[in-house]
Amino acid sequence: AIVDNLMIHFLVVPYFVRKDLSKVAVVASHAGAITRSIKFIDGLNRYNIDSRLVVCTALPQKNRTADIFLIGDVKDSDVLIVNDMCDTGKSLVAAAKELKKSGANKIYACATHGLFSHDAIDKIKNSDIDEMIITDSIPLRQDLPNNITQISIAPLIAAAIKKTQKGESLSNLYQY
Image 1 (cartoon, rainbow, N blue to C red):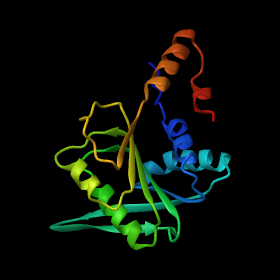
Image 2 (spheres, one colour; image 1 turned 90 degrees about the vertical axis):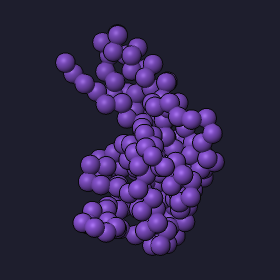
Image 3 (cartoon, rainbow, N blue to C red; image 1 turned 45 degrees about the horizontal axis):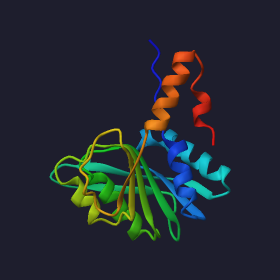
Image 4 (tube, rainbow, N blue to C red; image 1 turned 60 degrees about the vertical axis):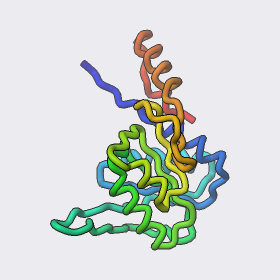
């Protein structure tokens, strides 16, 4: 069986275009997020938004807080942290703190799946993250804080089902 991952960059990039950003550092939170982050950069560049890749990763340490490493410059830039999911929020909040300390302007985060275990929502609410955008792939409580925005993934899923039923390629789902 063939499995296709449905990528959300084509849903989220237009959302950020409406925010009138001009200089954006797209942050991969780990090596696995680099390819996903590059898709966001390509999308932002199509809208003439100057964007570049930055890597900000946490290296866990035994018996103490993880060390955060930043590769790239975020000074005077709006930041978009890209990830596939947000579970505890611990590494995301730590990355946002490091990015703010390094001179980032507004900090946005984006994840396909908002698992939000334990007190993750409160961590994000009280963090340096100006806005977290997630899809509705997982039902969430209704009283989300103002800095968490949920967007519908339904149009993407519906289009993928329709194309699959017709035997068509899913590749043009990701065109802006």
